[in-house]
Amino acid sequence: MSVEHPKGYTGKCNPEVWDERAKPPQPAVKKVGQITEEQVDTYFRDVSITNFRSLPSTYENQCYVFIEKGVVLIEDYFDVNTELEPIKKDIENMVTQIAELLFKEGKIKSKYEEHGFFQRLTMINNEYPGANILVHKRGYLPRSIQRLWSGEKLCNAMEQLIGPDIGGHPVWNLRPKTPRSHAATVPWHQDCAYLDEASYDTHQPTAWIPLLDANEENGCMEK
Image 1 (spheres, rainbow, N blue to C red):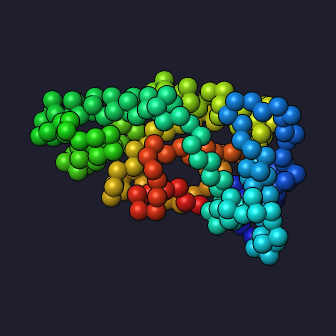
Image 2: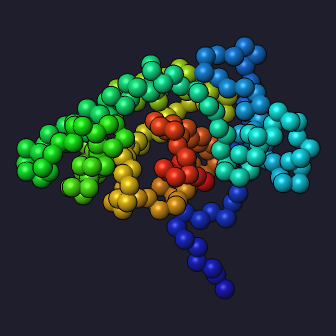
Image 3: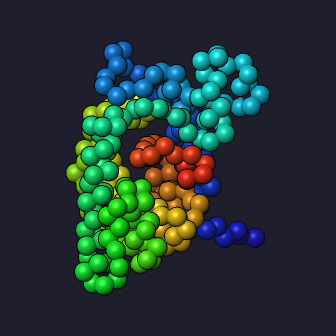
């Protein structure tokens, strides 16, 4: 009796693509933006609860995060003023353009200019549901985000995880997540579901870069 599998199912596993066997040679001399060897090891190490307590103490906090959350946390990696603030300003400009358009068309009664970066789009979206999607669908990637995404700093860190042959994924989204907006909600998923089966044995790291202090209350990354 044959079993019908869903589209994309291959029946194969490729743990060697992500575990310690995939760790590329590390540079003898660190380049700008490259992370510590402990952080690289935490990323690749297949840590189990049984051997966790035997790890060196310097590993303990990061390995706990890796076990519980599936990520390695790197604090203060980007400079707030020179690298993240330009991104916020570019996004602010995009929100201003949306506000001007909706106000001109009589869709909103206020441009909400008195509200800050983290509140203005929410206020606009409360009055005109779907305003956040207008930002998403503009198809415009600000230059500041382009510089961060393709910059030497982040690429050097990626080199430690996948080697020097680096290719950026061609699909991107600037997806504003305003509170209680179902239109911008994406259910739990794995990105490989959007890709060809040939990608299953390709190591694809992801960098999640919040523009505010993220926590469990305001929507931190979770895996």
